[in-house]
Amino acid sequence: MRATRRPLWRVRRDTAAVASAVVALGAGCSHGSGHQSTLSTSSASASKQSLSVSRSTRLLTIGSTDIQRAGPRGTVSDAMRRAALATAQQYVDSAILAPLETGKLGHDYPTVFAAGIRAAAIGADEPILTDLSVGKTMTLNEQSTPVALSALVDAFGTVVYVATRFAVKVQATTADGTTTIDRAVELTLEPVGRAWLVVAYRVTATRTAPTRKATTTAPRHPTPTTQRRARPRSTTTTVHGKSAP
Image (cartoon, rainbow, N blue to C red; front, side, top):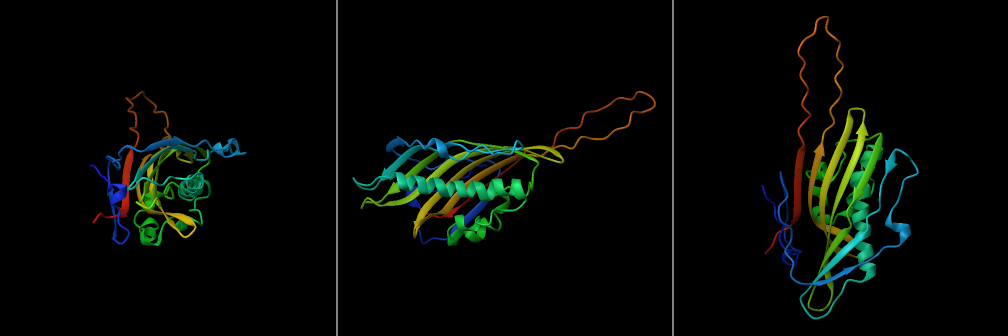
């Protein structure tokens, strides 16, 4: 099944939010020709290695930037890129890493989302947006792709929306074994006061459940044995945003 969110420039602020869960993620937003640039972050923030040998994580970094303009003016400043990256990092920290490290969501998880979609993010969509269902792990290795930015600039040169797209892969161990989580994330951000908040999202989470090793006792006489099949991969997707006019 395919889920396609409306193109970024067709999102309307005053429309109601919608959400759905599907098995596979389809095509993303369409983009025309736009300015391409890459911002290199400082070496201090490019990566973070935990002091614990059982935990390895990396900070998000900025990748390409695509700008769609309704007029001849407008650009995405370095400050805007950093602000968008900070919001995406806050989502990863509070929704993915915190549950795997502590068994609880980060306390600032709800504040990542604008008021219009916050109820869905902390309600029906929480099992897909977060790894709270996995719970606290014993070891953790997290890697992510560079964050691709897509911005919409209006006719007056004002940046209206910035979409962030990236993938996160986690390998973690629990008492039941090793769990692998692959997540594709698209967060559409809008300036709300001094903050950039998530006003729409599309997330796919694929989790490979661990299989506990069975305890067996050798029979008195040789008998045929069969191998247990691994649990099937579980894939879920959530799409949430504002509908087009």
